[in-house]
Length: 414
Image 1: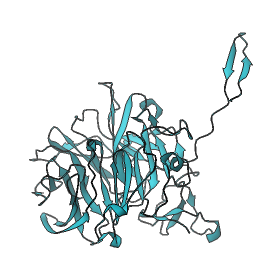
Image 2: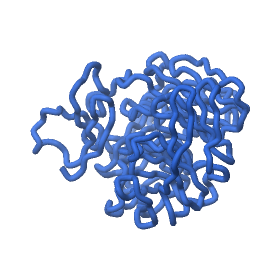
Image 3: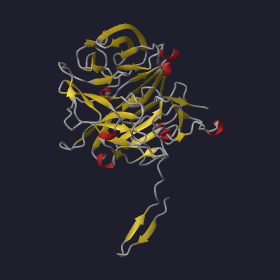
């Protein structure tokens, strides 16, 4: 039983004080800061509004519609080179360049599920690919040749067969593919799939892995383009780390980040995982934007330190609603759109033009890259930078190596 202390106050009143709650894990960033768009790196973002595709600079709120394009935007993605836009209109995939002068339906994508689609990042074919499929599979990938004003679709291969991703609440779900990694959500479960043969094979049920003791109301699934990190809204809270998850009875007040788990990863409950050294980060949105606000629909940019998401609220005229970019190492949240986005603005996308982050994180956590860096450098699993010259025996058992271009790979069992 907790021991209660009785404190006498100058006024003669008494106050019952319970012992202080245990501190949150060091990787839990419980109060985000609000950033300025002028501090964001060069780049642009894209979203749908009133059957238009809007493109705007990350550093200035000046989004303009792609001319002569009218369609419903259910999902939207940007190619790795930043030159092409991929849209799911609720029935099929459509690919176009940024000025809309080239626009083609993706052959074979008609009838595909709006959450089972996107670009294949780090394709094992070394070519641009898009993927699509119905909720109950199979999931296909199609080769794309795109350059300048030239767009052509080529051969098709099967990524997933024998796995159903249909659960009836897929409007809040998205699926990401990078190399041999697929990440999505099924029945409120974060779901990892390792595609055989380094991503060139076809995955079935044996390649699927989930956390034990499923939560409720998980959504907003995304994966970094290099395939090393995943994130989602955590849903319900955990008694072992009270107050340390950005959730309130299913509300979405932030995001959790974990490594991509390969298919042979040992099982663990979600609450054990959230308190363990396997976690990468727990990010709370700025406190003034967390009560009666919903942060969701995360999508990673091409730079692993930046994501874009949507914030909505029950307050109709609240000035803070719209699209925000999160720099997760420093837990800086920056609004990039105005508050006029419509209900159809479900998912958005963003592309970072510069490789070096502008934001700098505290030295005790993930440290942003420095200009003109030419070496690779190491982070521990909790996001703290480690000198690349540190002796092997003092480096952590698990970590992330970042090369000079910001591309990450997860180390384990060093």
